[in-house]
Length: 109
Image 1: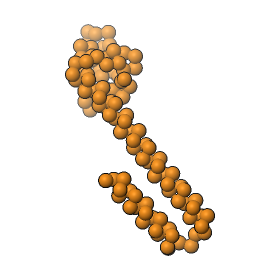
Image 2: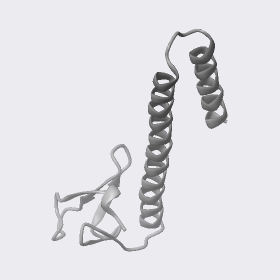
Image 3: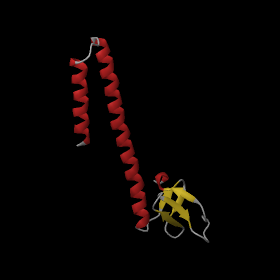
Image 4: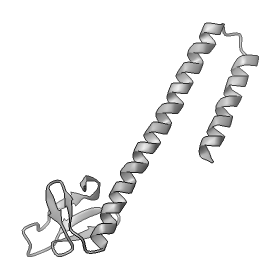
């Protein structure tokens, strides 16, 4: 839905550019190319962030299920780490070799 609204806004921008400006054809082409590049970059960035978030949430889900996951070369499980929900960080438990070690869930495979 957001992409449709974005396309409508871009379409209205181009109509405004076409009818209400005194730019030359080459200037309009340059403006169109820049706006198209920005829109495509925003879509790609949004897709990248969504994939990264899904990967992190998948690691958190596997941790909550009691499975061992690998984060930054460290085997993370619920026996040695706790999960801080606010920051999605694994924190080493007391009396373990990982005591006070903090590992971000975004680094997990």
